[in-house]
Image (cartoon, rainbow, N blue to C red; front, side, top):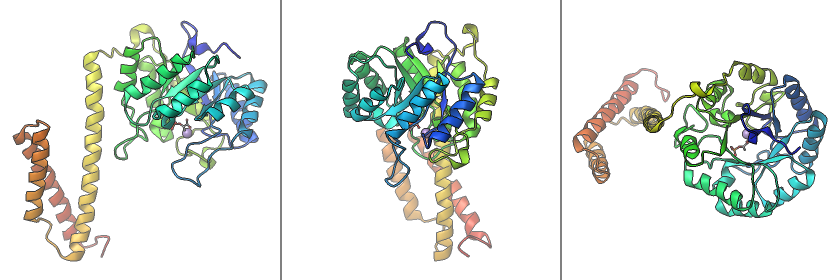
Length: 359
Ligand code: PEP
Ligand code: MN
């Protein structure tokens, strides 16, 4: 299965779908059979080795899952793709006859791992899709792409899966669209696929993210689809059923050349400002949540909400920090006063209420 249409000229968006993890032969078959029937997918995905934050969580089915994937490839004539994170994985994937591989976000962030995987792929003609690193570092993403180019890989694409948020946000991973857009500007020939499932972290946001990806001329999507998302062993909240997948794909508008959003230099800067404002708002919410907890505590301990020593300390330390960054002191003072005023008001509200949680 060598002709993957992603690299053909004037092609339609490349759609990859399938479960986050290969859990069983039956689960993979049920998912692939339903997806094949839709006629709307170009490749079937499933993770075999899962990178987990803590040990003891489901770490994937391991090597036997490769056999199941190859059965899917043969039964449904679908190219299959899985994640590799080590040279050993590469060896096993190549031996099994998997068609394409992707590099996970955590691996892209580690040049040693990328070097090792690229070396194991030297002289092999297999498509490699490289997810962005978890942190918003474009150079690291480009560095990984270059390492595969140097190993002689011809069919390389990037996958935009969003960036780890500083604090929990509306998204599981903040899209920071300006970064894949900048990548496209720096590497115009590179195909970029959007992974709305890992950006969203929940099924409700997938459609909007996918449409925006099409609006800015991305070359395809990778969407997590599971026959029974509630029972999925990984990423249950963001996976969708094959039925929901079809309904999303059918509603998406593929834009023509003249309909693409014009992302010029000014628009790219506006996108940066958009994601910063979003994070500012989320941080303010987080700060006010802590004020509420402080209100509870101060009520319990019979302390006053406003303490002059603490306020002076806040002003001095923040003003110095801002001054070192070249921020106008008047502007900074106004912001600090506003934030502090709201924090005290929040605490007062809690302390004056009859039924706080601690009562
Ligand atoms: C995945 O695609 O299931 C996955 C683990 O992705 P990421 O590396 O983007 O977290
Ligand atoms: Mn996943």
